[in-house]
Image 1 (cartoon, rainbow, N blue to C red):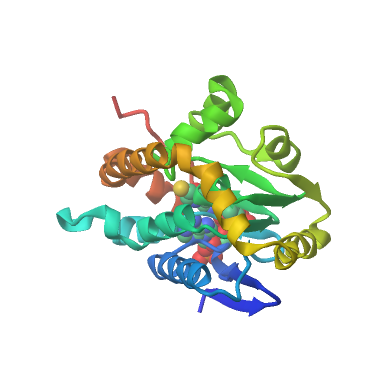
Image 2: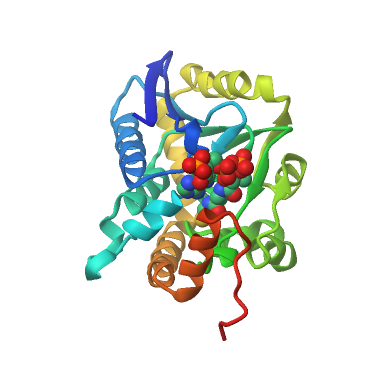
Length: 259
Ligand code: COA
């Protein structure tokens, strides 16, 4: 299984473990993560959730082969029921603290999921990117709303329109990450922070997290739905097909023929 879960000392760890494909996320992996988040929310013994990747790779984002073979909303079905949307919803609805430990690359949803975590610790080797436009796609998981809010339109345009990658230091400066740590210390530091919730009253933590999120909840859900509709349509666009083919053919995409 490419998603490993373990519950230890009040912390449910969700480990993305598909290093041979740089932890690219398949439909099955989204479903497993959604199920794990929901199980964590329902289990009184779990006080916090920790999301980690593998040494040197958090995740390279959605599996591009899956994008082509099993795009959400395929065949006119409602994309909001697809595993990726279930994962998004489960993370948005998780009322227990979620801590992310990021080493190496965090691409696409690898970065946008961090916008919904409560604590984000990044290794000094981390490289974040949201290269949706270069893939013929649009921002997802509320990033078209939250990234400009976090850092202002100009800096968001670098990351969302140009798809420029950014460093751990920059992730901290622009408010995506709490702290930058040596790669070997990120996981243990993140676990220590998650375990601190064992000593705090869980009801107060839950209600506080809800209060912190509640005022923007409807707006985020609406943005996720709107982005999702456009994203699903764009997955079938000739621009996206060219970008995906170029990725697997290990060449630069050529968008010169598009208007
Ligand atoms: N989907 C499907 N397969 C992926 C993948 C993805 N998102 N990311 C990596 N892989 C696969 C590669 O095709 C390659 O497979 P192969 O060994 O069968 O050829 C393998 O994982 C290793 O990837 P590779 O690109 O050779 O590793 P790298 O160290 O040179 O680069 C990345 C790592 C993460 C920078 C690079 O793989 C990458 O840019 N991936 C795509 C990121 C992306 O655009 N994601 C979608 C965001 S919406």
